[in-house]
Image (cartoon, rainbow, N blue to C red):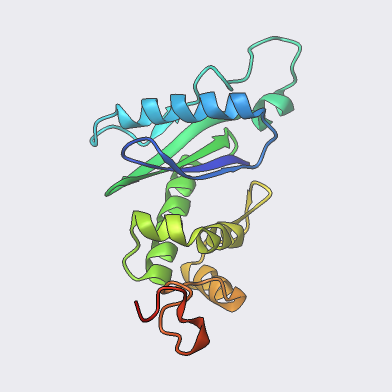
Length: 180
């Protein structure tokens, strides 16, 4: 199960935070800070998998069952593209290589929808970002990894914005600065 999907820029500013498990806001904020610190400090040649920081790591008490430990978040998988870090927090039951593929499909889907995606596209078109994520992951479970199906699903929802809302419209909706 995927517990969280995070996207950070190189400065550590979150561009997407989607948690599929219930966490207090204070714990979420500390987790965001810790994970970015861990991921950003790693060299590009390092492995893309990390153990979860102690903040959320499952306790090693003998009273917890094996099923509960398999369901607890334990792995951080990430990829660094240009100015953005794409990070998944998952349980040990998820394949790390499949998670890297999921990140790749997520980025390629955004690239196809925005035609050369950049950080500003994610900021100003967050609806499309969430729509792509919603096509791929529902409730922490991966439901679609086919690039074409994800892109078609988002386009069918009509959530793709290629330009600002008022650009290209003529008439009364030119805005208050028209003619100045």
